[in-house]
View (cartoon, helix red, strand yellow):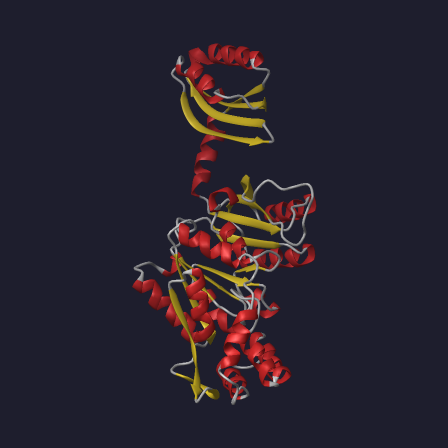
Length: 402
């Protein structure tokens, strides 16, 4: 009768180890049931689960032990009973999730809290992977970023409660924690749609125009109410645009020249384009500014509001249909259909209450540096890193993105 054996090897990484180990096993007609390895700072942890014909068990163990001793590596053998193995095989049907921990710097406390919460909700960690680059010892808290990804399996009794608990400890530790199903779509997204103001750019354009018009405080107050969801976007938008009446058309260029991109935005767009993604701006802002971003970044689609200008002056109105929250969701659907993809393959990123319809419609909706109401309502949030942290949520390592 055959025997199932788990073999673990550890020590300084050696070139050709897998080849040597499996070559020895090949002499004994060994069947490979599972295999994996990890290398951290040139230190190897290598594991393999094998089925060995009963008459060959002692021989294969002896040869492997002798060779590992020669290579100065530690090796252990554990016999796995058939019942235990059968239970392991049955576990393959359990739901799988990805928990992403994003921070300027990863600490032991952060991992301890995330792993503890995962276990409390009945999930088991199968694998832990670092997606970010190797960190420098001289930490730059303003620009450094780190991401650890946990692959977990099991059935959480209350997924909504789990998400709420993750959101709570994320706030306590000043980190971001994303929890998403590990499905076929995760690394197969094809379209990313962005809000513009306070998402792709580090400003609310209408507020900047209002400052030039001398009504900055009035417009900012209305904007804050709208972003918090305290006032209907379409109503607030009409009020704010009306306050811009009489503003010179030349001011638009003045404002555009001083607006900066959000941290990580340019790197994100460049990387997405290199990977074949389509990108779009779905903005409640103005086409004048969205079109400039499109030209500078090579964004594929732009939908925003057209500020009406007559005789070189802003009239206080926009032309055409207002791009509000509902319209953004409709545009997401239209673009997905145009690109011949499903909504599960769309990523949506925004910061305001008017972005929630499109965030909920997308396969991956991300609230970026959003107000509390939006963070609580969205399924995923990034508040502590730059916009390029979205790449971590779709499983890309820094070395791949670069």
